Length: 244
Image (tube, rainbow, N blue to C red; front, side, top):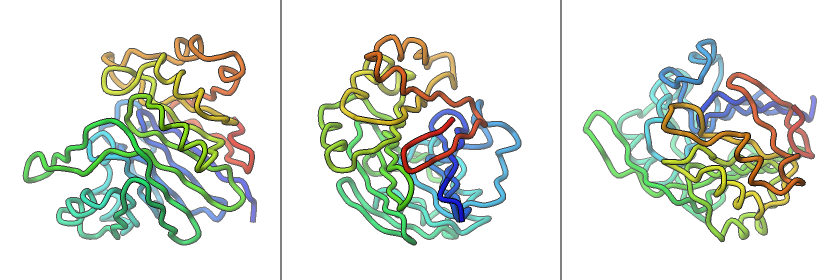
């Protein structure tokens, strides 16, 4: 079996991670309705795990579809697990909380702090969706990955680096609802990554942050590590980081 996985960007904050054994993790799955998600990605052939940073519809939009079709394991904060489980009972909910780590089938999932809101809009209207978070994935043979979720920059990102040493760092840059390019550039300084993947930008005109401006705010050594992926584009996930 190859020890190389694959990371596919599906627009906004949605990623599909394909493991070397072909298991599939979706982070913040928003497929149909996502203006940047290619239509051929709207109806996946496989989904084993759904990893959710928070409850907003642009991060959990495909949960009903994917849990109904695949009965996936859903990793999210404890409160959101309860809310989603009530509405979409076909999922296998694995609730946790910030600071915690859980192991599922050889994959380590951790939740970190993020600064954002988290309300779930479901059949009963707006419901509390627990705290927003960032997430870390650790798996033998592959580089540790950190998805910051929707957040502003904060100094405790230095602790995330100290605890997990992620080699792949996914940072929102769009501004308005998250940090913009300047804040994301400061966030990047807290890490020693192999690859930085910008996300949560260009979905709507209100998200004005761009990769070009982000790179201008970065130190030259970090700017060289930015690996923007177009929606639908994949890159190899190795033990060292991302190989585009």
